[in-house]
Length: 217
Image (cartoon, rainbow, N blue to C red; front, side, top):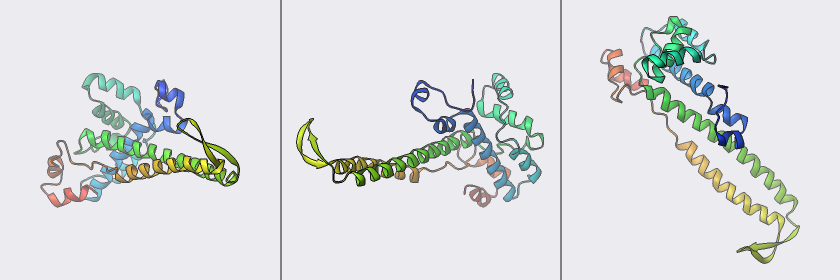
């Protein structure tokens, strides 16, 4: 089965290639790896003994997900995130001990979902703007072409084709406003540690609460 696109009865009928990729295993697990890299870079910046060579090794294996190793490991540990931590570590032996350091599973699962949802909404937004632009050109071209308007499924009074198109545009502009609100209100979950208390990071930073707070941004 392909790992580069999301498959469901709906996606096979209605979804475009870009959208199917966004929700694919390749997109999901490469986003997990990017989040692990971001965490390691921040931890190194804040003073943990992490080396640039380790991060470089992680960056070299963002896209080439070793699915078979992850699947085999999951049969043993029964945990998807730990299975992918293990599989990533096989590809990055120098970095195996720092992958996911101090984090909870939700750091990658939930944050990756939010990132992918945002990317999907942005894709819809771009396409919606293209439709609005095309309809605006259509409305301008046919602004003087008479037609009969309808209401309650029956003829009403004269209007123009261009005027009718502007009403379609209005509905789409409402949709655009809703999309902008949702995209603008999405928030990542940060890296709060195993139970949200940051206790694991407090241990890593030897009780330095201020440094733990600096990790969040």
